[in-house]
Length: 338
Ligand SMILES: *[C@@H]1O[C@H](CO)[C@@H](O)[C@H](O)[C@H]1NC(C)=O
Ligand SMILES: *[C@@H]1O[C@H](CO)[C@@H](O)[C@H](O)[C@H]1NC(C)=O
Image (cartoon, rainbow, N blue to C red; front, side):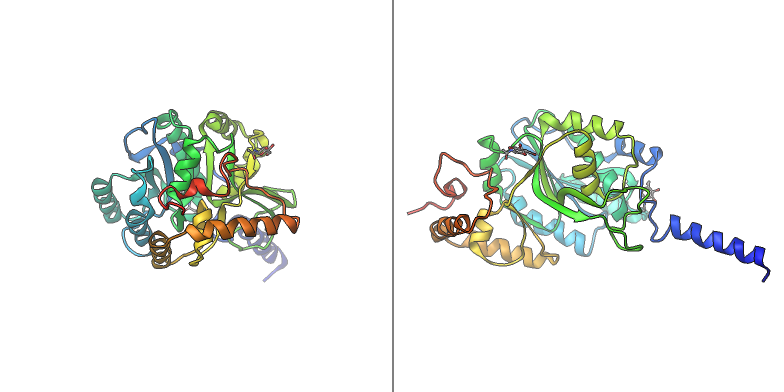
């Protein structure tokens, strides 16, 4: 092979390495963004009294993601109506037409599927999040808050209800604030090329769940549309980090958003969202144990633990706590205390 040939090969190699390490383009095109306005399976508008919960799930009708949807419908999703919440499972378009027909059928049965016109893929989650923000603006702007969550969480509906009713959720974004170094490991799930994001770290809200107050939704959308940089394909750090910073939208930290998969009653009773049981059978067990238990003793213990934590100098980030009521009693309207 002569040297000009190997030079061409070398350039080719570098190009391939740069553009398509893992099927990603790292950023979205204008054409892709236009798809976030296109609804394939629609649902009715929100009532002003209900809080929409947008749940990211995948456009499949069997396996892990389907099981997770069914588990949510059987567990905390079943409480939604009682607590004036509304579940909406958000999906893209499957590559397979048979699946599309089955998804329509599932939507006809449950009335909780919202589908947008981009191909379902992990690296299209930014498109999914933008689609649901736009949809919420058009169909739910009469509500006070919206919730984004993944499908592998257990959500505390009575607590969410209390927080919404008592307007205890701050304006802006609320969730678990994360600070992480930018990932520079080529091929890693969250790899971010330096040319698309040059700072060394991000601060954003963990994507498994966050709340947005509707008073900031219009501004948030405007910021996304006018943001001059690349629309990156890692949804949580792009939207709740980079875009929120650019638009000066507040990120409020709450320790009630937890990485947790287990059966500790106090944790379950005092968290708003628990994330980490990737097998939905574990989430289901967690939910059932929690709901069948008497959490009364937990409250007493919890206040002790909190005081101990304070003495250790831990910063109390609990801005969601209701200050007119002692401890966490506002959580327990279904479990009366002695
Ligand atoms: C994301 O959606 C667009 C539009 O449907 C599609 O062309 C693209 O292939 C999808 N991205 C991935 C990584 O699948
Ligand atoms: C929300 O976060 C902002 C800073 O991002 C802070 O100033 C404000 O006090 C927080 N609000 C609550 C209710 O914690």
